[in-house]
Length: 105
Image 1: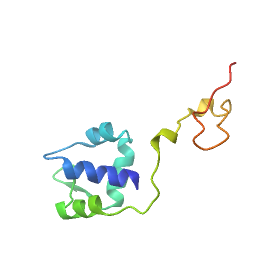
Image 2: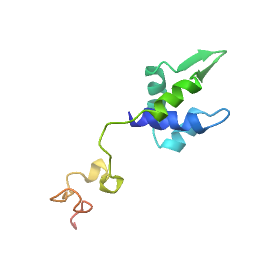
Image 3: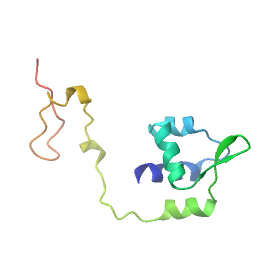
Image 4: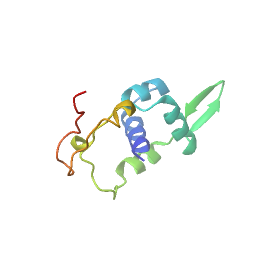
């Protein structure tokens, strides 16, 4: 859902052409995830030897203006831990207690 919303916001604001790589660079999502999302939404079409995104301005506006009923996410509370470090990390005891820490080796 986050990827869909982000892609539609970008497409809503962007004028002209944009590549999958540019979308990937702007969102930090993998190109494969962007392609599969666009395919799942039936927005990616193959025409004239290349893939193109076909979406009407009305559809973008509908998605952008749609109210999201999910709870807000505090991005300060999200901590990414590399898979190789997951066994070594002590998570905070309570939500919002701060970042997880890696004990000294």
